[in-house]
Image 1: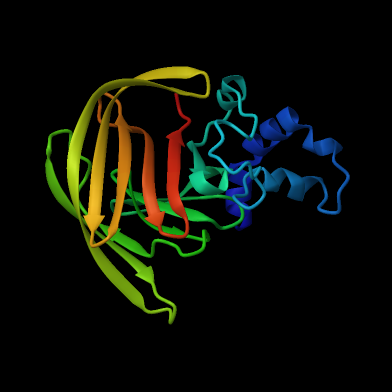
Image 2 (image 1 turned 90 degrees about the horizontal axis):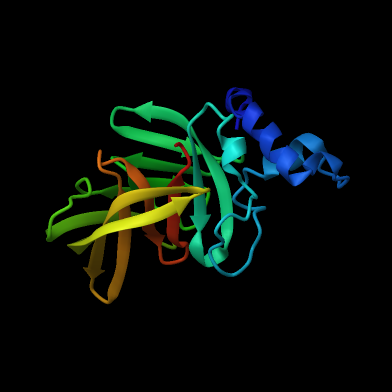
Length: 221
């Protein structure tokens, strides 16, 4: 990623470095690159399960970060990275790590990823609704010949009621909504946790058969 994004996250890098003592590391990457690696989806700890907070984040450190930040977890790989807001294109907001992994959202729903391997090239569907019903979501992936393949899923919306979640030392009262999506022999469930003002506090969304699920947590207070 270019220098503009690096400058936007300079404060965050310094704070996370202080937590992780990355300035004391002596490997060949050098201090700056080690700091950047803390934002990298490819260098987060691989535990085999989704970690709660493998980057060692604390609320005290996050209070000093002025730019919007989200925590992304690739569940089945046990990898985590920080995402910073990169650009807004009409109603789509794209967030990025410092090593060019990007996730794009529309109303909190992931509509594209890049840099994860077998990415979600595009997705279409409605905003998350809090009432029971059925919605269609269309996912586009590339096949083995790099040709786009669209697949439509029928998703049953299941309101789960009120649920309190904790994100880096703060508890939030949310409404959880699940979507059980099916197309042929493939079924998965997306989960969304929304605050009373319909802000997406947390979500667990399917990306592809290879990547699996991506969990996104909004780290802003």
